[in-house]
Structure formats: C-alpha cells, structure tokens
Length: 101
Image 1 (cartoon, rainbow, N blue to C red):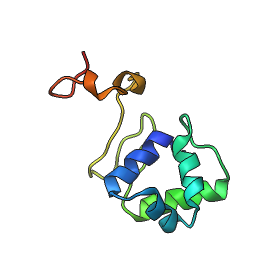
Image 2: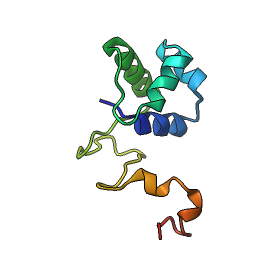
Image 3: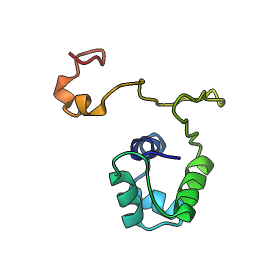
Image 4: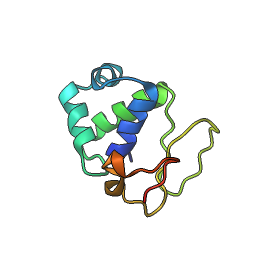
C-alpha cells in the first residue's frame, strides 16, 4: 500500500519529476498525476501499483507503512501520528525550527 503523500515524498527524495517516474515505472504521466492527486491511499490497477512500487524500490526508496519500523537504516520521511497535513498547508504558518504555532 502506498499513499499519495508517500509517492510525492519519494519522488522528491529521488529528485525526479513525474515524467521520469513514468519512464522508470512504465506508466503514463497522466497515471502518475492521478496517483499523486489521490486523497490518501492510491487506488488503481494492481499491475500499475506494482510497477510503481517496483520502480521506486529499484531507485532506492523504502516504503514504510504506518507503525512499521524501517529496516534499512537509511534516510526516511514519516508524518507523526495524528498530524494533520492540512495544518501545514500554508508555509507561512511554520515558525523557525519547523514548529507550527
């Protein structure tokens, strides 16, 4: 299972755009765009999801599920439990040091 925010974060960590991810996964750019525009958990064709996950993993991304421990010991990104990303939608609300008011 992969969420839209995980997909966007993975792409950002890799420093690639949607077009490059489409090339790596064998999917179309509109498919990648639809996946990234999903509300949370990406829904779609199982084959497309498997291609996407395989491409991300081959590029060095480890997807961490909710409550799971990262086994790789590399860099990673995870939202804190109960955090509402909508609270951080306005970058002007973040104080120096990364905390919200």
